[in-house]
Length: 409
Image (cartoon, rainbow, N blue to C red):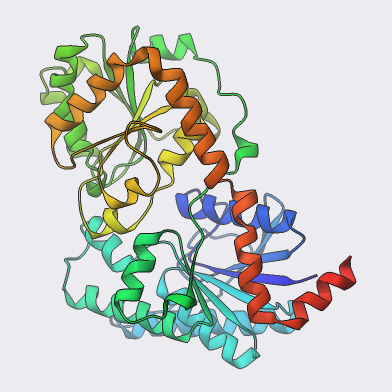
């Protein structure tokens, strides 16, 4: 049985979009007959044992800590993770190292792969220099930005194969001079086994939150600046003018949380906006069930143009209508007027008009929902898409993996 060691920034039991994508990958690969494990770097930061089993998957932790000035500290992190991979390989002997961004993981895997003589796949989920700009922790063109970008280029150059989550990231790498033939795409996906029949609307929860008779616009996720939630709140007075019963349900939290609450309190329709704070992952479906339209008003930036988010796919899988800003990452996931609606980014009036127009099309909701679900099922089902990894591994391992497959059969 072929063994794949996934090299990760962090993992379960932490909950994030990153860890949920990892869990989906491991689940799908295990179903395909691969033996999988994960190893995390020093940034996992969740405590716990050196070897941890979560949801049936084994994760190994990198011991120790790294210190020093910027640049040196990151280099020490790479070294610690590389050493941990090599040490684990003496015991478990993986056939492929499959590293996931950030570049620290990719570079650690490249270093370990050379020592071990095994191939490395480096998968980019986002360019972390652009994510840092989106999170307001650096500026485009800063020293930190350029250093992170250079580390990314080094990881890509050292890997035997590269995967990205979308066409936007692949195109950017090609523009940097990376051979197109070296890059594959593994699109964001949904584990449809986790999304059966959508949960019924919880009338008691709706009453507790003051949702009224709707329609309810929802956002469930992290409150980062690039998500454009300030534009969504600014759109609410215009939406309520056309649909007086409209409500906005904001589930989650993050760096922009306090500013968004202050903005909402000052809104002329403050009583139509509700914040729940973060809710347990097991409760999320109850809040999805209260909504009619899920809104994703991301601001236009390199990050949002190049990276496809996961949340709109989950919403479509939950049979929810989706309205999203017209940025590159959203255009890869949906077709305007078919599986959802797109509106001009950074424009509250355009957001309000798109939401109001969609609400006016109530007679078409069932058809739009069905098309959204079918789109996810046909193009973003993890259990189907995970087979793309198989072809990459087969090329890297050659006759070795093919002989194992025949022996296993």
